[in-house]
Length: 291
View 1: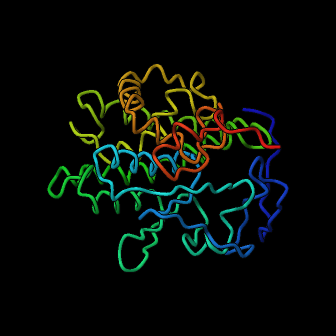
View 2 (view 1 turned 30 degrees about the vertical axis):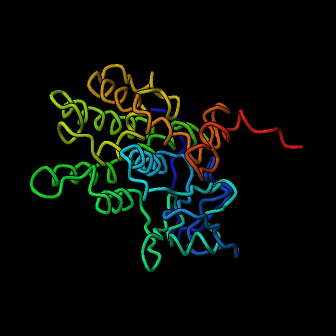
View 3 (view 1 turned 90 degrees about the horizontal axis):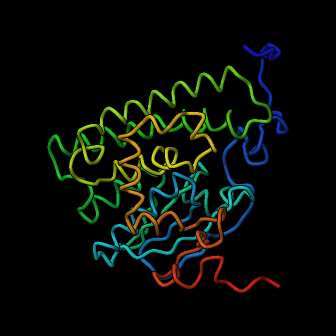
């Protein structure tokens, strides 16, 4: 164990905005808007406000998969929310999601706009609306929902736990890294066992459960999260790797990864998506340099 100084919690905790590591400028113990700004609205039925973090990728993959199946009613505008600049605390975004987390979606296809927040809720809403990627009833539907809720409960240990202390904390401390690395590996082992005799996580069909889990655990084993693939020995999870590579090869997944992406290689970044043609003309490597 390292020589980390023991922390004695105060009787009453107070907020120290300088102690939170990489995201200290946007983490705070209060909710609500910090500034007035309306969200932009495009011409399509769905208005997405997001960033290509794993939770954001879930939704853009779903929307691109719907369009790939020919559901033209799933056309969407995807607007970039720069969480590093605090866009999620605008009055417009807080109206869409009072929790100030991406992604947030407005469904404007009906008589009255409907807000949907939390990535799993968005996946469920879209699956129900279009009747795909989620069985209608029975044990098959329950199994899909089992894994969607598993992901929502498990990923905070991977992202906010392991990812934070391994990659983003102001100092590397052995205890939290060991604690959350153990849990991350346990979760990978759960998936590896389940995928031993399955094509997809809930069975033979590709569902919203795969769309929920892949952006986190699939991209982790593909070496795209936290620069931690070697540390976690992801090559030992053969079934997860097979599953992750198969989903990664889907054209809709490749497009979904690009939407609202503002980091990485320029050819992988499509900051905003307003038309299917944007993938061919508006990635950051195709735009004229700003003056």
